[in-house]
Length: 196
Image (cartoon, rainbow, N blue to C red; front, side):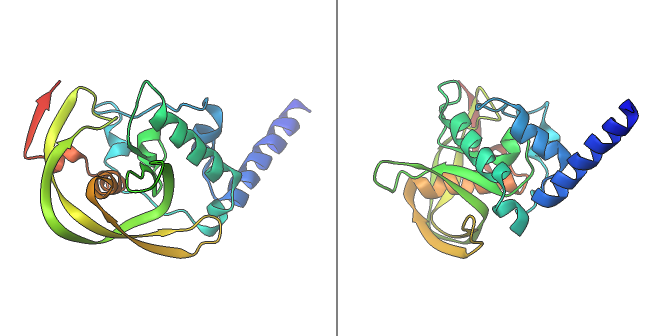
Protein backbone atom coordinates (compact mmCIF):
# COMPACT_ATOMS: atom_id res chain seq x y z
CA UNK A 1 0.00 0.00 0.00
CA UNK A 2 2.84 2.40 0.89
CA UNK A 3 4.45 1.75 -2.51
CA UNK A 4 1.19 2.58 -4.34
CA UNK A 5 0.91 5.86 -2.44
CA UNK A 6 4.50 6.76 -3.37
CA UNK A 7 3.87 5.91 -7.04
CA UNK A 8 0.69 8.02 -7.09
CA UNK A 9 2.53 10.93 -5.45
CA UNK A 10 5.31 10.70 -8.03
CA UNK A 11 2.77 10.60 -10.87
CA UNK A 12 1.03 13.68 -9.46
CA UNK A 13 4.38 15.51 -9.33
CA UNK A 14 5.13 14.63 -12.97
CA UNK A 15 1.62 15.74 -14.00
CA UNK A 16 2.08 19.06 -12.18
CA UNK A 17 5.37 19.67 -14.00
CA UNK A 18 3.75 18.95 -17.38
CA UNK A 19 0.82 21.26 -16.59
CA UNK A 20 3.01 24.20 -15.56
CA UNK A 21 5.85 23.56 -18.02
CA UNK A 22 8.53 23.81 -15.31
CA UNK A 23 10.87 20.91 -14.62
CA UNK A 24 10.77 19.20 -11.25
CA UNK A 25 14.17 20.70 -10.37
CA UNK A 26 13.02 24.21 -11.35
CA UNK A 27 9.86 23.85 -9.28
CA UNK A 28 11.89 22.72 -6.28
CA UNK A 29 14.28 25.67 -6.62
CA UNK A 30 11.42 28.16 -6.95
CA UNK A 31 9.06 26.78 -4.33
CA UNK A 32 11.36 25.26 -1.68
CA UNK A 33 13.48 28.25 -0.71
CA UNK A 34 12.54 31.24 1.39
CA UNK A 35 11.87 34.63 -0.20
CA UNK A 36 15.58 35.40 -0.51
CA UNK A 37 17.09 32.82 -2.83
CA UNK A 38 20.61 31.39 -2.91
CA UNK A 39 22.75 33.42 -5.34
CA UNK A 40 25.00 31.30 -7.56
CA UNK A 41 28.65 32.36 -7.61
CA UNK A 42 31.84 31.53 -9.46
CA UNK A 43 33.69 29.28 -9.48
CA UNK A 44 31.37 26.88 -7.63
CA UNK A 45 28.25 27.46 -9.74
CA UNK A 46 30.02 28.17 -13.03
CA UNK A 47 28.05 25.56 -15.01
CA UNK A 48 24.68 27.27 -14.63
CA UNK A 49 26.22 30.73 -14.99
CA UNK A 50 27.85 29.69 -18.28
CA UNK A 51 24.75 28.02 -19.79
CA UNK A 52 22.58 29.76 -22.38
CA UNK A 53 19.07 30.09 -20.94
CA UNK A 54 15.86 28.81 -22.51
CA UNK A 55 12.73 30.87 -23.06
CA UNK A 56 9.61 30.85 -20.94
CA UNK A 57 6.80 29.10 -22.83
CA UNK A 58 3.06 29.85 -22.87
CA UNK A 59 2.34 27.43 -19.99
CA UNK A 60 4.97 29.02 -17.75
CA UNK A 61 3.73 32.56 -18.55
CA UNK A 62 0.44 31.85 -16.80
CA UNK A 63 1.91 29.80 -13.95
CA UNK A 64 2.02 30.51 -10.24
CA UNK A 65 5.66 29.43 -10.32
CA UNK A 66 6.59 32.34 -12.61
CA UNK A 67 4.92 34.86 -10.31
CA UNK A 68 6.67 33.28 -7.31
CA UNK A 69 10.05 33.31 -9.08
CA UNK A 70 9.68 36.97 -10.03
CA UNK A 71 8.71 37.94 -6.46
CA UNK A 72 11.64 35.98 -5.03
CA UNK A 73 14.12 37.44 -7.55
CA UNK A 74 12.98 40.94 -6.54
CA UNK A 75 13.29 40.05 -2.85
CA UNK A 76 16.77 38.60 -3.44
CA UNK A 77 18.23 41.51 -5.42
CA UNK A 78 16.86 44.09 -2.95
CA UNK A 79 17.85 42.19 0.19
CA UNK A 80 20.44 44.17 2.22
CA UNK A 81 22.82 41.21 1.96
CA UNK A 82 22.83 41.63 -1.86
CA UNK A 83 21.75 45.24 -2.48
CA UNK A 84 21.95 44.93 -6.26
CA UNK A 85 20.45 46.80 -9.21
CA UNK A 86 19.66 43.72 -11.28
CA UNK A 87 19.55 39.93 -11.23
CA UNK A 88 19.12 37.20 -13.83
CA UNK A 89 17.41 33.85 -13.34
CA UNK A 90 20.61 31.76 -13.65
CA UNK A 91 21.93 33.69 -10.65
CA UNK A 92 19.21 32.01 -8.56
CA UNK A 93 19.67 28.59 -10.18
CA UNK A 94 17.02 28.81 -12.93
CA UNK A 95 18.30 28.61 -16.51
CA UNK A 96 15.44 30.65 -18.04
CA UNK A 97 15.31 34.04 -19.80
CA UNK A 98 14.08 36.22 -16.93
CA UNK A 99 15.74 39.28 -15.43
CA UNK A 100 14.81 41.83 -12.79
CA UNK A 101 16.21 45.32 -13.35
CA UNK A 102 16.04 48.54 -11.37
CA UNK A 103 14.62 51.18 -13.71
CA UNK A 104 16.61 54.31 -12.83
CA UNK A 105 14.97 55.91 -15.85
CA UNK A 106 11.45 55.72 -14.32
CA UNK A 107 9.85 57.64 -11.48
CA UNK A 108 10.41 55.87 -8.16
CA UNK A 109 13.22 53.75 -9.71
CA UNK A 110 11.14 50.52 -9.53
CA UNK A 111 12.45 46.98 -9.91
CA UNK A 112 10.73 45.36 -12.89
CA UNK A 113 10.82 41.84 -14.34
CA UNK A 114 11.42 41.08 -18.01
CA UNK A 115 10.60 37.66 -19.44
CA UNK A 116 12.20 36.31 -22.65
CA UNK A 117 14.10 39.56 -22.87
CA UNK A 118 16.64 40.09 -25.60
CA UNK A 119 18.65 43.01 -26.90
CA UNK A 120 17.64 43.67 -30.51
CA UNK A 121 20.22 46.37 -31.20
CA UNK A 122 23.05 48.26 -29.52
CA UNK A 123 23.27 51.98 -30.28
CA UNK A 124 24.76 55.20 -29.02
CA UNK A 125 28.27 55.83 -27.85
CA UNK A 126 30.40 53.29 -26.00
CA UNK A 127 30.75 54.26 -22.34
CA UNK A 128 33.21 52.61 -19.97
CA UNK A 129 31.98 52.25 -16.41
CA UNK A 130 32.48 50.31 -13.18
CA UNK A 131 30.54 47.07 -12.83
CA UNK A 132 30.25 44.38 -10.23
CA UNK A 133 28.13 41.26 -9.98
CA UNK A 134 26.29 39.43 -7.21
CA UNK A 135 27.76 36.20 -8.64
CA UNK A 136 31.36 37.46 -8.51
CA UNK A 137 31.78 38.88 -5.00
CA UNK A 138 34.84 40.99 -4.16
CA UNK A 139 35.63 41.97 -7.74
CA UNK A 140 34.87 45.01 -9.92
CA UNK A 141 35.75 45.90 -13.47
CA UNK A 142 35.70 48.64 -16.07
CA UNK A 143 33.34 47.48 -18.82
CA UNK A 144 32.52 49.09 -22.18
CA UNK A 145 28.75 49.25 -22.82
CA UNK A 146 26.49 50.98 -25.32
CA UNK A 147 24.57 54.00 -24.03
CA UNK A 148 21.36 53.11 -25.92
CA UNK A 149 19.76 49.71 -26.57
CA UNK A 150 16.56 48.40 -28.12
CA UNK A 151 15.01 45.45 -26.31
CA UNK A 152 12.06 43.13 -26.78
CA UNK A 153 10.39 40.96 -24.15
CA UNK A 154 7.23 38.97 -23.49
CA UNK A 155 4.47 40.59 -21.47
CA UNK A 156 3.12 38.41 -18.65
CA UNK A 157 0.64 36.70 -18.83
CA UNK A 158 -0.66 37.80 -22.28
CA UNK A 159 2.39 36.67 -24.25
CA UNK A 160 2.43 39.91 -26.25
CA UNK A 161 5.85 41.02 -27.49
CA UNK A 162 6.84 44.47 -26.23
CA UNK A 163 9.64 46.57 -27.72
CA UNK A 164 11.36 49.40 -25.87
CA UNK A 165 14.38 51.69 -26.17
CA UNK A 166 16.48 52.09 -23.01
CA UNK A 167 19.19 54.67 -22.36
CA UNK A 168 21.88 55.55 -19.82
CA UNK A 169 22.73 53.56 -16.71
CA UNK A 170 19.56 51.48 -17.02
CA UNK A 171 20.76 50.36 -20.48
CA UNK A 172 24.02 49.21 -18.86
CA UNK A 173 22.10 47.12 -16.30
CA UNK A 174 20.05 45.49 -19.07
CA UNK A 175 23.21 44.62 -21.02
CA UNK A 176 24.83 43.10 -17.91
CA UNK A 177 21.75 41.01 -17.02
CA UNK A 178 21.02 39.93 -20.62
CA UNK A 179 24.63 38.74 -20.86
CA UNK A 180 23.87 36.39 -17.94
CA UNK A 181 21.09 34.82 -20.02
CA UNK A 182 23.65 33.92 -22.68
CA UNK A 183 26.25 32.55 -20.25
CA UNK A 184 28.42 35.68 -20.43
CA UNK A 185 29.90 37.34 -17.33
CA UNK A 186 30.97 40.98 -17.17
CA UNK A 187 34.54 39.80 -16.59
CA UNK A 188 34.52 38.48 -20.19
CA UNK A 189 33.97 42.04 -21.46
CA UNK A 190 35.97 44.05 -18.90
CA UNK A 191 38.94 46.21 -19.92
CA UNK A 192 40.36 45.80 -16.40
CA UNK A 193 39.47 44.06 -13.13
CA UNK A 194 40.24 44.97 -9.53
CA UNK A 195 39.38 43.70 -6.05
CA UNK A 196 37.70 45.81 -3.40
